Length: 398
Image 1 (cartoon, rainbow, N blue to C red):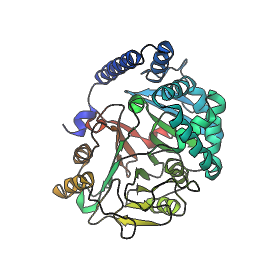
Image 2: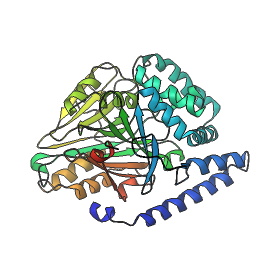
Image 3: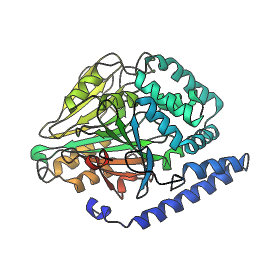
Image 4: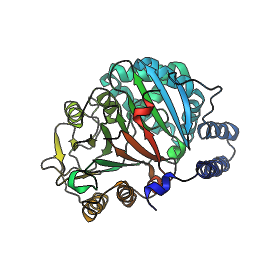
């Protein structure tokens, strides 16, 4: 079924299906917990997965607020990084408390302490903007700062991206798709959220994100620059480099400062990185993949208007072992087989073909020239849809 048919699905159907899945999952967790602290765990899940993301009163546009578009919560933040973090913590206090309570149930104390220790080592490298946002979230929500810092420095993604443009597309316009595949128990399944930041300084951004993240894995700024990152498995480095930066925080900083894909790539390649990653950045004219090792980098540009990336480096001298990832191959084949007629429907099909089974929690399709992104989240596989459109031009006016 094509993307445009997905977009005309009735909102009520999506809401009922999502609500039913949340109720079933919450019930299963409650039973599986053996009723140990059952009431608290159930309450935490009910808070985090509440389809209405409780908001006590209607807040006018131009003010910090949560709105509910179809089955997706959308939060608008304004001001300095600290002010935006404080607004986030205030609006989502109950959800953040519930998230950390659930994480404590899913992860052992040893694992949590290991994440906190890593975050403590990385903290000194973070930008003042990132630290201010996280501090604001913590102070207004009352959640544990160290755990929230760990949440923002540890997450790893096993994802894929595809960009097609020029002679390869039906109208010559660039299109970019991004799968967000995560191995994070089942906690993330219903925690997707759209975050719209209206900073005092820099470009406004819209992110397809997860609860509690100050940075972004997937997003677009007001100049039409879109981006997504992927963990890399075949780099030379095996351990986290604690004098490097977490890519999700770095990409948010870069998006607020970059007016083109090339500018964002330049920003990212000038920095040190916590772990080897791929990042695709695209605008209405071109797409570029930065292969970011801890000690060196390389950039790949498209051939005949096609560029893809997944969880492996392909540039010479960037990898210790070559690996022809099947998901990367599926993306390239789909683009080549539909060369010259590629459109949003084919892009959605390509991302669905390249999804990681049982892990595809978000799928986003970008149209940079129109500054629109189509989002499917909080269902597996998200690449199947339905997709809902978010027009950045309209959202940043509000």
